Image 1: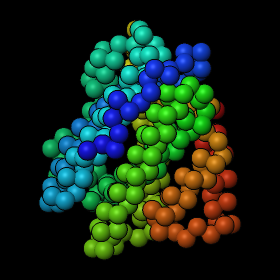
Image 2: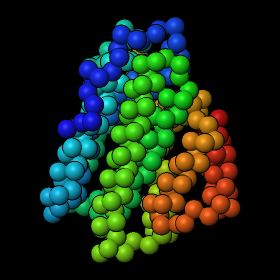
Image 3: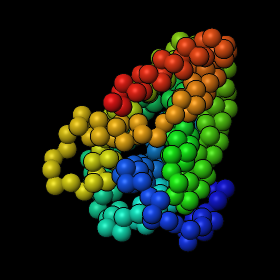
Image 4: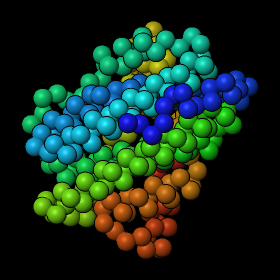
Length: 264
């Protein structure tokens, strides 16, 4: 069962005067990506076909992700009453689909898949924290705070199962780091760019590079250095590196400047 429900959100406190226009398309896109959680859960169950314990974890995780999508959708509809979620979501799921009937993880192993899932949860927990810290709209602040906490809990959940698989797969630090970096590179893939495109219900054709650039520019207004520093610490933990102060500061400095470069 999810830790909270839509009924727990104080929707009556929504304050249109505090809505930042640049955040609205980000929330619309996020609502669609999160609402697609059942497909992600199905993919994980196929990858971990011999692990009934993890399959149950994946199904519960998917339920919480879909709840995030429903909550974000409701806020987006409050912020923009003209937002047609069903039409946008149909566009999104038509243009972007996950692998189906897979024999193994696209990461090469179950252990590699868990490393990638940890990176996703690192990114999403930081993402929603950044939005929470950048908005004064009370409902969005509460909502993103709850979702960020869920995503951090999901990270710890996937990390615990990663430790279980590392006992037999012996995936080294540099191998894990390579997978994490490849997942970071995929933040410019079609999923986020296409969700951003679908959120606009455009009449023009889809240009991946253009919409990835639009998305990153919008995201760039939310992040602060402390968000990146927290991400770096979680990455260190995932790959098995001790968070030495000098190394952590250098990695955070590089990550912050790399993100600013990408986000224009």
